[in-house]
Length: 481
Image (tube, rainbow, N blue to C red):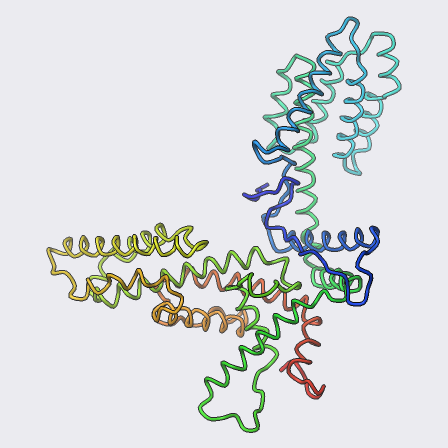
């Protein structure tokens, strides 16, 4: 099974959401009971884990492993080393001391039992018979314990239970002769097998979770809300900001004053505007809405991709305008130019200074590539507008840059059209400046729409009363239009 690239030390993916610290509800005591906090934490954990399994088809667990060279890693190594050294000392004594070895065999038996399925009746009975701890203790008392015989049975059992991917590790166990090394590696492989079994179970449950996903997530969130009544405060603020922005845009676009100050916004348009705001979220401005926390890592990643696509489309538009159609349409020119843009802008989204430096370097590279392409065209003259590019590409780091603003507005319009349309209708038409990045933008828009549609389906009943209050303060009218 495929594993995620980034994993936390507790075995869960690092993009699994960590809900922000919960404040006490208004009017409630500042300190909640430990049992209620644990119950609330379990609700949040179960909801987060189920959501991750549902939306991430590549979700999988990995064995716990502290970060390399961390304090936890060093302490863990010291403790493990001390344990196995102690076992070595016991088994090397005369006569051998099997106290720790018996404890390990009990643990091995428990791990093997956890890998058995309900249909493994005969194997379960055989396991109880061979690893009968009362019998093993009797053999220890009479100096008749045969660790290699028991290890051989354990390895054979592992071979019958393991996934094909673990066959090499199990075969390698048969080559080991030193008891401590053998037991240690048996534990390592069993740990991997337990992870394989957990991932197999997750993938087996996924189709059933998908069938009940909306009901399950909505129910779990309601349980959290019952225990933490103010758990929609950030969501309310988020929707209020989106409603205000939507009204401002409608007023600005109106050809004539709206009669009677009528509010032409709809719940759907406000909600779509709110989702779009998540792609350019400023963590300093307000706290993230609670209803979208579980998808924050995915939305942040889409937002970073979107920022890079806006810059890429802006550079391509400037190059096309100043280099002319003849050079721009020459074979391989755009492809090579796009590779250069992507490579030089990679990773520059995190800091404004990095982005500014990347654009300066990109500007010089683009000019060089245009010159080389002109030379390859049988010594064609350099485009007259070529040197107008100098300064214009590097100025794209400014958020109020006219070209960047234009492309950003076109992208926002495209994504808004995707949210308003259905997946069955496909993608809306792209404005001319965006056609050069159409494949990437369409893929991004599709992923964004999937996240939004699922979130809207799950949390719609929680959004409705908030939107109704925002749009119909008097309580008259219907929120969903």
